[in-house]
Length: 140
Image (cartoon, rainbow, N blue to C red; front, side):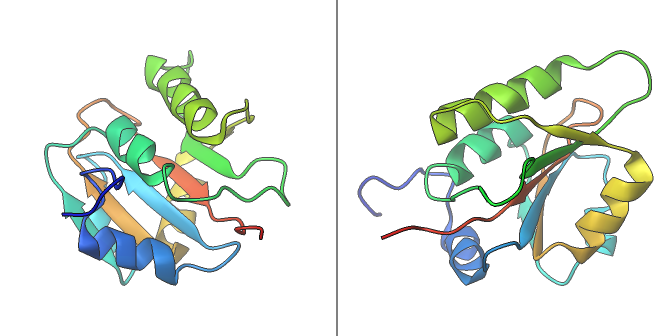
């Protein structure tokens, strides 16, 4: 056990986050997403909501401030879903400021998740509970 480390940050997840470089993306995907078919690094976190995973990651993970929208979510057809506001609240809490999230088409999300540094298969049951986080730099 480590002090001041969120309990959802397993050794496997911490290792992946530490190995990522500036500009790499990590995908946190819902229970319906074909995570096993994407990417080389898969972290399975069954039963854990995607929003809880985002909260945990953002305790140690800097978002990229060289781009306008370092966070993207899979956009559902029709009206915005409540989970998008929850993702935005997670990001604001983790960053200490508001950041505009980008909604992207499912086909674009699938492509970016396939190219992501790692994919986290959450236990998120809400539809379209998929998000990408782009890593920034840790300044001295």
